[in-house]
Image (cartoon, rainbow, N blue to C red; front, side, top):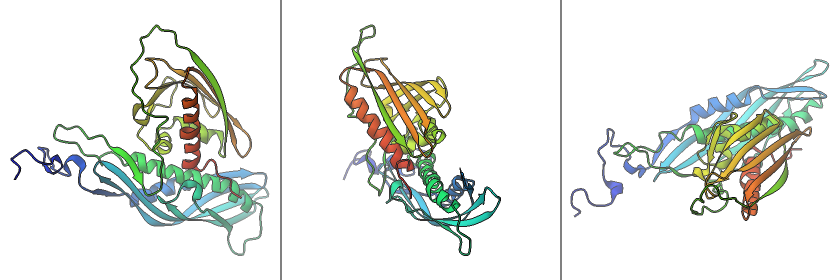
Length: 338
């Protein structure tokens, strides 16, 4: 028999006020079904698209069948959600004629990526044919997909607090990477390597590169993706600190990446100081993101300079995979809907 105070620490009840789930070893669960219902309605209601034929808007969400919960096991957060979403859209032609239709999303689940969602858009029975149906199938469905991706991001950012409980000294244990049943690549740009900081005052050899990418969304939505903390946490699948103002700091991926926004032109341009923590001390690359509206999509041009020589490939591939591809997968900005 182990002596008092000895043995597996996972089973030792520490001196804390509630003596609950010490060391976060036991399974705890938080039901977020009610919150999810409200959040989904908030994100979907009022979604609006416009085209040469007229405009369409989501006017009702009559059906939200499903559930959602967050679980903590051994300090690891696991998210479960499964929803059947039915919404109503109303279209108004340029001549003032009203039309009504339905949207059906039967498989919003942690088992499916956003790109795999089935979004069905139809016109109500007995309604005459209208080009607005096609507008809603293309542009409307794209906005619905982005809204559902935003719900998942909010779920993972707003309900992590309190799931990892403090220990006796009052400090909360560091949460392990969150999981869902869907396969999710741990978002980390390049390998985490330890490197001693270089002394300041030493000239560093640098290089530059540029990238171009297309996103199936509007410039304003893409702009918000980079400066909104909840959206950043959604596509990085990790806690982040993002102050989306000029001079605001950001820290991502458990401190692997940090920097500062030096210039912000809403919906058009973002300039930032950006660095890996393994780079020489206080050395930052300058990254400029320019967004151009190309009708149904947004073209993003990225200019990156002052990258330490030898870090070009790592930085370039990291941005392509863990920013661009992750954003498309999370919010559906890479899926074409026909």
